[in-house]
Amino acid sequence: MGNTKQYNTLVTAGEVIENTFTNKNTDPVLVSQNTIVLAELAHIRPLLGEKFYAELKLEHDTGTLTPANTDFMNYYLEDCLCWFVRFEVINDVMSNISSSGVVNNIDEFSRIINQDVYNAFKQDTYRKADIFANDMMEFLNMTVYMVIMVLTDVELVVIRHLTVVVVIVKIK
Image (cartoon, rainbow, N blue to C red; front, side, top):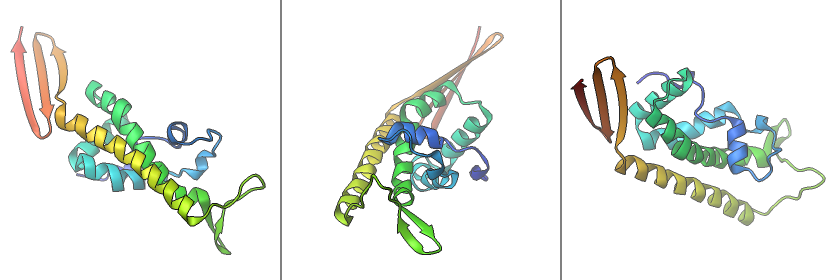
């Protein structure tokens, strides 16, 4: 379908922090573009399919999202993707790779959590992402999109449900 990595990510680091982090002062640098792309490729593209994913990436990148795709992004995809990004970024936020090896990120106001607490935290993050993913897929599997375009004396109605597309042309 083409190189979708050339386009902007579907969410920003700031959106991930705003939607999923308790501490809104988290440095956006901790949520790298690469991690967002990783979450898109690992979690979102398999759910949406290559064609729809590529369509959203192109429309989002060029600022030409259809009204239906804008609603889908705003009400379903962004929340889902933000939680999957948080899931992917947790290891990088908690630890750092340095010349000394893997070290824990800790400051004077923090303490290291044990492995059981860490695993529960990471699994809870995934559970939340999965809830949003299921909601998103339920919406896609049960909703009919309608895009109406009026071209002079012609009204074009496109109805898309899953892989079925119906086009109705009405001459006024």
